[in-house]
Image (cartoon, rainbow, N blue to C red; front, side, top):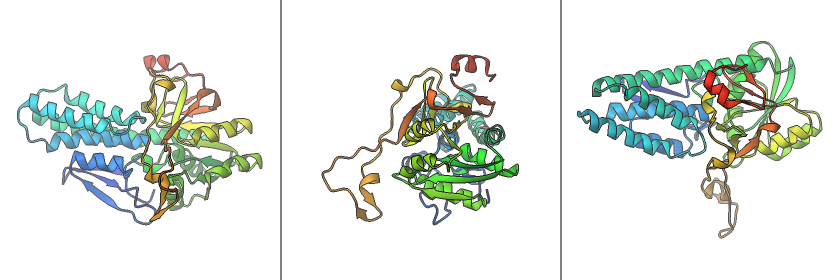
Length: 347
């Protein structure tokens, strides 16, 4: 990318700096976030979004809670940080990475019994989460590029790119790595209603890198598959249970259509997105506000009083997925997740 990392810790001002994704593609705006309440608002408003990025934001959020806490008694200090972490962890129920990042930094802090030492380790651990995210995406890209033909057109949905991570991306990281290796890859980016993350974000970041990208309406994908204009589909994930992949609403529709047309359907996601203890039916699907669907700019496009449903995610069964690309390797369903996490290896 020719832009800064999507999120980072600023040592000089002891705050979080992030790209406000709601301002793209018109403006590249960097926000200085100095309070946990501001971070909560940023995540709620989708200034910060994308599963891996939420993990990093959660980690930095705990560090921010720690360094901004004025309490000198350790028990009071750690209770205050835990309380702010609890608030932060509750705002995006479907994506698992947010809690993963929060819990990782909390665990590092709770090994110590000193306010000063806990503040220091919180920053160190949060920075490690961010650096590992960068390395993880690069590994996903390297593994994933082996699945792409030397010349291909890839369909993607929503934004699983540098803007959804610290940098590089998961699904788009695979595309970037393939292009870097000299493969001729063209991308079809679904607009991704209702907030247009594909049209606004995916097309913006790929165009910044000079990668051939075309935006299409969500409802166009199936017809282009039938016409033979799509060679494979690559998406990200917000949570992967034993039986399903949770991702932006519309993903399941593309998976069904790809299966019907014998087109490979790939998921690119870090191991931190896996939830080996849960099944699809145990996961809460986030429902967002009515206004995301009923308005377009300053115009109302749904009559007042008409009911609206705005599910943010859907679940795609494992039998529709060709492979899951992780930083450890390529997994092909069915996946024995208990073994995966027990041995931390991928066959």
